[in-house]
Length: 527
Ligand SMILES: [Zn+2]
Image 1 (cartoon, protein in one colour):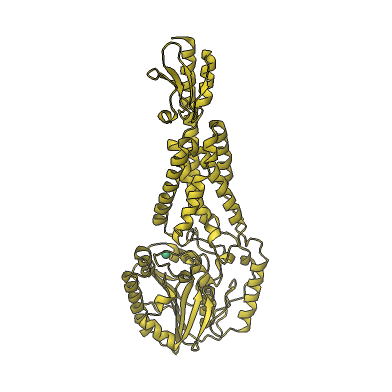
Image 2: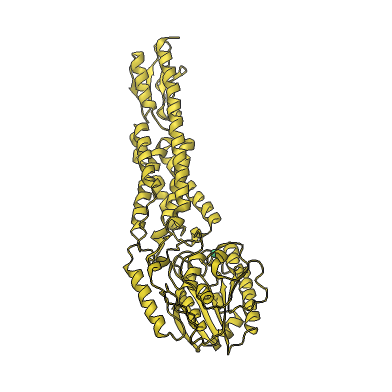
């Protein structure tokens, strides 16, 4: 074999190794970015919020209008759906009917804490259902225990969240049967999870959702019949609503509007507006066990002076805290930008893939917008959200491949990573309790889209050094190199009547011989 053939073979082998490393690098980026998308929500949790430093008042049991409170939370119950509940409507007519606003993000975990502790997620730092431990805040359960009352919790939700959140302050827990008789504890929390589950599975305008709501109404009726409204009180709430197709977490009207109904001892009839964070202070006031140390919400029943004072202190602590912005950019993103910059500049010498590289990002973000996937309520359900993002990313990747070819995938990943970096930096400047809420969680679909394009790049991307290799081979062989078009380079093979040609996108391979051709190959055959 001639010496230059050895050289070509060596370059080819060395080239293959180098591009394998590039592929592995792109694959590692895809994994890292996918993890950043998955953990973004948990990373927003603030472990020690400033409000925890608020000085707490000693427990008291003075001026209790109700000797016992049963609090029913119907998870995922829309306000409009609650207006069709016959039993609940009767309780509304006899008690306090509150058209309330759920706290953002409209997840169950953050809203359970908001209601039981009277504290919005932006102040509690509980920004996700994935809060890893019991919360440290004062709560109706803690105040009840400290006042010597018994507490109980009933839930049909297999998720450990409701039972774990205040575990130390609950005397008895039943985590299986929502239709069990209510225990005689002075504070009973009944969590009904099947309405939310049905909303996710069938949507919130489906007959199945209506049936689940009717079943919850029956359960409320069963419990209300066991109570004496002259000595006991019933509080019925929802933690959030649902968008029509099922899902919550965002700030859509049907998601943030929730019912609160307060009925029985200590309640004055009427209609008013309120917030989810008002539930805890209301229960504490009814049982005479307040004020809740960290509560920024206000009682929906008559408040005493001490409650008003403690609320002012808690609100001042929250306002003074500097951690009210997100302040979070996953480290993975700048690392991804740098690695993709190295991969793209080291691989492609072609102008066209660079020019068309923004197509993936433009199409992907356009599709997010067109399909309402920007709404955080859509990203709440991990299964359907993943399927949706994969479909949109797939469309965007096809558009990128169609226009720019496989050589453009690495530059497209780089452009997307820059867009994601910009999005995350903008989100990090958002307040934890924004009015819109869309930008706060936009990094989640953005990171998912970036992970997808990195994965496609790792799988079929061309880290294109072929023109460079061809030039080197031609020089080594002492031959003339011609540029044809579409990035194809070819030179005449003096040993035959054909050409030795090198198609631009051939990854690290030596020039292929094309003896059959009597003229320079056309670009189409070699792309
Ligand atoms: Zn849910």
